[in-house]
Amino acid sequence: MIDQIKGLHHVTSMAADANDNNSFFTRTLGLRRVKKTVNFDAPEVYHLYYGDEIGTPGSVMTSFPFAQMPRGARGIGEVGMTEFAVPKGSLPFWKDRLSTHGVTGLRDDSFLGETRLGFEGPDGDSYALVEADPRGRTPWTGSDVPEHAGVLGFHGARMRLRDAAATGELLQFMGYRKDETAGNVTRYRIEGGNAADVIDLEALPGGRAARQGAGSVHHIAFAVEDRAAQAEVRKALLDTGYQVTPVIDRDYFWAIYFRTPGGVLFEVATNEPGFDRDEDSRHLGQSLQLPTRYQPLRDRIQANLPVITD
Image 1 (spheres, rainbow, N blue to C red):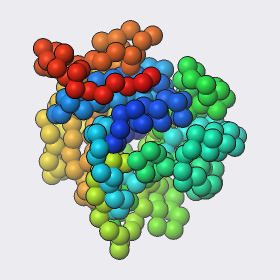
Image 2 (cartoon, rainbow, N blue to C red):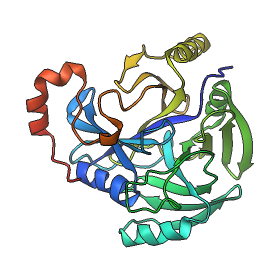
Image 3 (cartoon, one colour):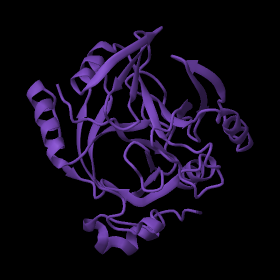
């Protein structure tokens, strides 16, 4: 069994408009944009990162805003909901704030004793705020969201699968412990890691396959401390029969990818080197940062990217 996984690192989704995406995460949810860069494989598209003050692993939501991308169709074989942790007692504030900002799909909910507020993102994305203990986490205080209500980071994520058994076995191999089951949803939790430690698997045997597009999660990333731990994880996955990519330098972390039995794309990302490797921590996300191979093309790339209204 793998014992190097520390919980979630980041979640990456796709979007149809860079400004709508930026506004939603920074102005509505009050997160800090910690990096403005481009998609490594499509430099005409931004890669935007949002999180806490320094982009702590377990707090970072990232987006690929492909202009005019059609909406995806929700279904099985995807991360169906991304969940953020907020301080206990803060959901009335959030319900009022999200309503004021025109957010749709608001729904009060509870699951396994947790108080939750579900809502939709600008592309029909499915999110929830979950009241939770801070567990040492502090929100970004540079927005107009008061500190006592600010987003702490991820709580976890829910995957929708035709058959959840094989993915459940994979999670247990990755160090997650099978927890409670309520209806068709089974919870898995990892011990001794960061506070973004929950994965829920929702079994939908008769569900229709998801179609990726704007509002879809592209991949979900799990955190390891460093490259040595990542190498151990990669070997263990390869030895078990998974097809895993070579290690890829993503500037702010190193990454490996593999497809799960349920069809969800998993990434394992290092906590090093972090988002301050090319910007002072006081100015994270303010200027466009480019991977080294794209630096000679900066003028052309920047001219073709939409201007983001901060």
